[in-house]
Amino acid sequence: MEIEGKCCLIHTIGGLIFGYFANYVYTSGLGIFSGITTLIYLFIGAVIFGHLTAKILGEESLNQKQWLSSGVFPFYLIAIIVWILKYNSII
Image 1 (tube, rainbow, N blue to C red):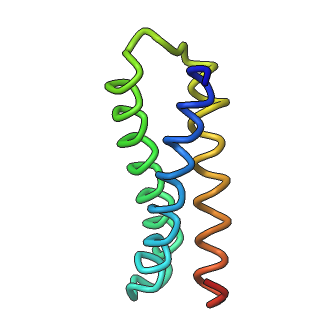
Image 2: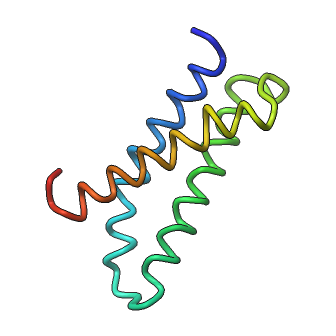
């Protein structure tokens, strides 16, 4: 598997995990700041999995454009989808 595929797979798993728990952050009772704190939570998750991917694949293996397209985009896409499904009690 290529490096971009491995990066995408790691970030997709991270998106599943952080998207599931984002519902609990959103419904924690912060009122008007719920959405902002949830997006900050997801940003922190993307940074964590970015560093994890850099340690696994090597820090020089991906440039910034590759990391955005095969790391950040799948992370947020999966996290938002899982968050919406969890919020609507589908999963």
